[in-house]
Image (cartoon, rainbow, N blue to C red; front, side, top):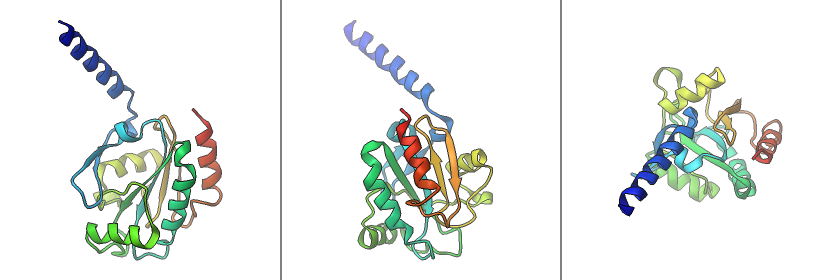
Length: 181
């Protein structure tokens, strides 16, 4: 009887958690060069999230450094950067996932979560990117487009590729969102 009550409590608890999930985070994604599937709600709900479509051979590739600095500086306050490599623009992410992972780690020391190569352009976009673009009113137009999500799972802003994540207007909005509990 006690076991039944515990199982019932767990079931009710998990249903309540699932209901609290923001539709914007109600997706599962695969880690870069891995087989691990991450439920965005379970992993990142309650955090401030900066989602970025990345590429290794782009004029903006050096933003990996700023993204890693940002992540290192603010992760203890609840920020997470999520990288989604994409070959959609100018074929600037042509490598395998293993090559992308090695490049990010060896060249920029990337520690923030990176996920499987993803299509982000309007016609073939991954469902997570469709949801982001629907909320923002636009799809990424190039590599290193950024979407900022608050702790409640709401899209706060999106930023074009040229916006450096450690500069205005991004940094002040991130700081503002981190103060919200």
